[in-house]
Length: 303
Ligand SMILES: [Fe+2]
Image 1 (cartoon, rainbow, N blue to C red):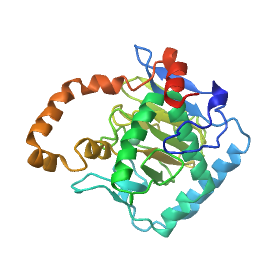
Image 2 (image 1 turned 180 degrees about the vertical axis):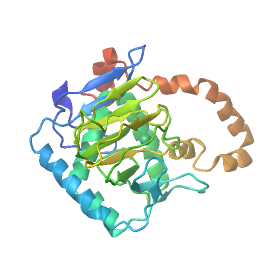
Image 3 (image 1 turned 90 degrees about the vertical axis):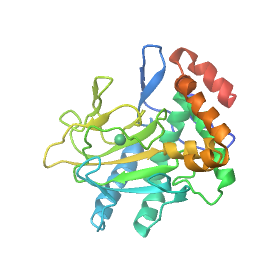
């Protein structure tokens, strides 16, 4: 099945020319559902160059950041987000402003490749969830065609570039992300992964070596996570792709805020609220069990 990691999404015509992962480790819950994917890296020697180029780009551009958009929220490092924003009092989703600096990262072949690889891993190991993202976001983009994904080859609607020199996140949950979703994190830099930069998943009781160039997919909106420190002379940055949960709610509310939904359709809003008592079960069922993965991939993508 590793060799099938190429084209998954047909409805959105997302094509990912990635290589199968060299070695993927799946972390499952007690029911066998795949909830964390240690995707590692594609089985391709050119990946090292891809990562070196990405690190160099981050180092170079970090010097140009005058006012970090996000500093100390998840850790002591500047971070810049790109893609679609919705939350924090916004009345509707909108595209984040794209500066020349951000554009250079969005058009950089290394970041495009990482985003595409993360997308394929998502489709490969969480096909039902991936399909749910596709169908929901199809509705969003049909309704608001001016919205733009940061990377056309990836399902995710947002990306963050976390500049160094020491990107070490505090223990946190990304509450604005889809709570039942899987975000992708790519570790980048020059550090010894045996000495530091591990990713830990607090509720799961796991501390995982996370070398530069590796990608992990985790439920960042539900599981506390963070990094162990790296040594003072080392450099670490990271790249993440994800979706805001607010976008999914915006669609579920009929392309409006919760307040507008309640005001214009109070009966519908009450019915929606009542459905939330069983919603968590439906969301859990979007994760594939390892034993059902082959059938799920076949059912979703016809492969
Ligand atoms: Fe996070």
